[in-house]
Image 1: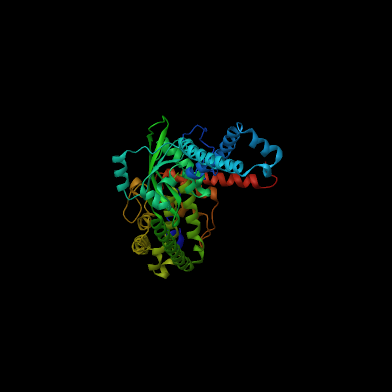
Image 2: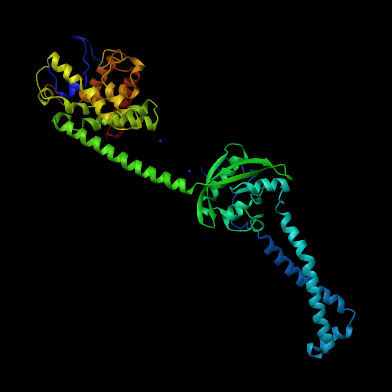
Length: 458
């Protein structure tokens, strides 16, 4: 049987004479949450300003009590009250007017002094008091990283000086505020879910942007639940680490890596194109093998990363043929034993070339092994079974399948079912039976989809 360049690098499976061929890789907020979490959802309206709120309440209460106080005092002074309400303010003598003003002023001052601590105590009661004693606070203040304590209402019940400096406020003005006041609105829901997981001991940390005096910066929050001093539900203590610069550096490195990776892939494709241009029958061969190898990897349940590495190796699996003499590649007659030995060197040549490139996958090894046979009769090292990398076993099947279903100068292409039958015949001998089985499922699935999409078919 004559051979061509394609079949010389892809061992064409053949049946014994007379043998019969078989016939042919974001969670809605409500998911997983029953509403009973000790960490409340973010509430934009929950922004307690203790001093301001207490003063407003005190002022309102002072006005009310002052008026009541004045009315009470002047009930005994019927003459002034009669003049004030029935004769008009103009009929009130100077002494009466001064008495009204004095009583009103004194009443307002007394009421304000009396109500302010009461109103502040009322507001503070809604936020648990700082729970650290003097020794604990001294230790916390020595830590340079921002530290915060959350109560069951997601309010800050305590912070250290580093946290206060981070947000550019005093500790007293921060304590009592809701943690979501310092988190951008577009990430408050994800922060809520992270706090819920911390409270349930599911995670120990998460990333979260925080609004600081230097703008919004990215922090890693290391947190864990603890029992508050006056509540049975778990509180949360957290420490914030500023990773903004690290994230920016990582993103820059990732961008550079992606650029270099794209350039490497383009280079491989260019070299593969050069290899294919030496024989018109190889046009598109590497692309087809890479696509089929990727589908086989997915069918076999390999990870996306493994699949990508196999596709890269498939795009360059015949790169070593650039060292094979051109006259041997295009020779239409059967090759001599010496010429076959030269042809077989292309796998090692390809591995040598690719070993100079730092891939995150064993691309050079896969290329070197893609002509090893499952029973150990392949080349260049005679590896057997699982000693052959799974990527090489996949490419071997994809390479042979594409060779059999492509046109050759000495024969016409055979059908997909015929090619599959030949490969199945050699499963366990030349090819990994699991890979051949995966190919069979892909071919049958493709045929079924074509029938469903064809008009007039049932």
